[in-house]
Image 1 (tube, rainbow, N blue to C red):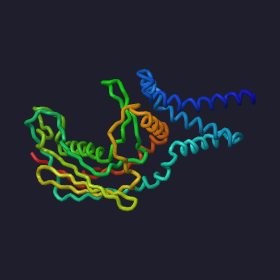
Image 2: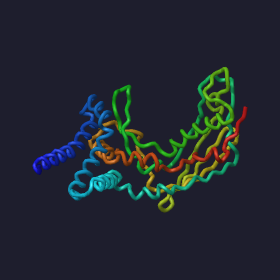
Image 3: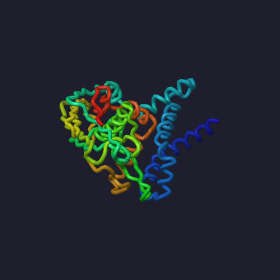
Image 4: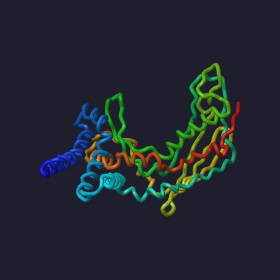
Length: 296
């Protein structure tokens, strides 16, 4: 019986060692097309299996005779510590992000026009000087291109990019609340016309003060509308500037670093925290602040 248990443990240790090796191989371009396919099927779950198996083996070693419920609790706690690791200190501060301060000097104008039969769009131009990610649990990830059937490393989306997309969503929500249905064609009302007809410009200026980043956002339109927003973020949300993406295996140093970052952070604990612990966007309270008006 003891020999069978020892063999099972040995097998589990071998699997534990092979998991990161398999992961790094599948991310590497030498795995070719089928490696990419296997990564899509197995890569997303491999880091989570690794931390659960490692937590199980540690629990098996330190609490061999404990009750099964105690063992399960230990596995969860240990896997949480391993899965979140150095980001644990950011959890409590992430629960207390400050709400943005919105000052509407003149509401932003939304034009209703039934002349142009196009799908509604909002023209925005975003500039910022310091790149911030919405969550400390956002990290380098993998993207794919069906055109070249290839994968690439990509940086997480920035707060300014996410705010830009949210601004477009909020304008559509506001229009719907006012009885205008976005997406109708020439027989009904649509939002915005040609480029520049209902353009919005979002400019962001950030400064670092002590351990905080003070972000001032200005949103303007072509009709004199101006909304100023102030956000305060912790400095650990700052991203290093760099290219938007790095082709998989472009250079060995970049490949290994990005692959290890992926493996250490792409687990179920960080997925959960990434979803719930996000910094408020500059645009998050625009509707409540009556930042839009409708014109025809």
